[in-house]
Length: 334
Picture (spheres, rainbow, N blue to C red):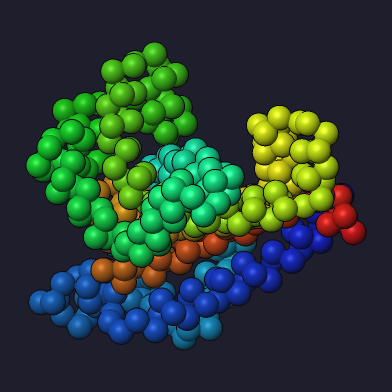
């Protein structure tokens, strides 16, 4: 098992190096001069050139990349061109909000998608299966930005049931920063009122972000459960008189966990790095909104820092999924 984990870690290194190179090239291929955006359209050429020299933008691209990699090896993601702060500090400030939104979305995926998938498999080609199929098709077909706007229009503007933006009300104070997750920090502080407020702000963006992945989770669980329920050992278990609940949850679902874990791991990675639209629509102060603001000002260090963090998390999550594979099925590690 140890050698298996080491091999997977070594295989992740070239992936991350490739991510840094591609991100660097793509971000610098965007037309425009970030130095000119910083100083404004009426600035002199000397002022623009001074900014370029200050941030190393006057150097050839290979030199800029080597300088970036040298800083990266020392834990330095560079300095934001937009606000002149270290990118690592910015990402550390915005990461907890994105993590909280991602965890809430993943919870919805698992808590709703798995039961719906099992229900659709057990009652295959019946009413429950048809309903879950409709839910899944709508989820896969609905654009995130449209769903977010419709949720805001209906539940926030027209009905007023849920807040529309931010992590807390404007008049509220954030809980003590223990983990950076407002719901958890409010619970640790014993402030149930603030916890409920943070939870209400979390519901709309979490549902909007999770709906597509919830639909995919439902279909994957359904397919894997149908395959498991058709195996010989299930027929034998039924012949021995085992209860339907024990057959479904202890035998069939347990043996269909590999595809479920796969989609859960991939969903978490995609949720973490793909919350840009959701955070922008709901003014959620996370990494997604931060990188959107950075893109509009051609803030290359911030863009590359966000991409590197998201890619590292994605690779790490896939590594954890591979390890879970090996734990659930020892044949995989061989």
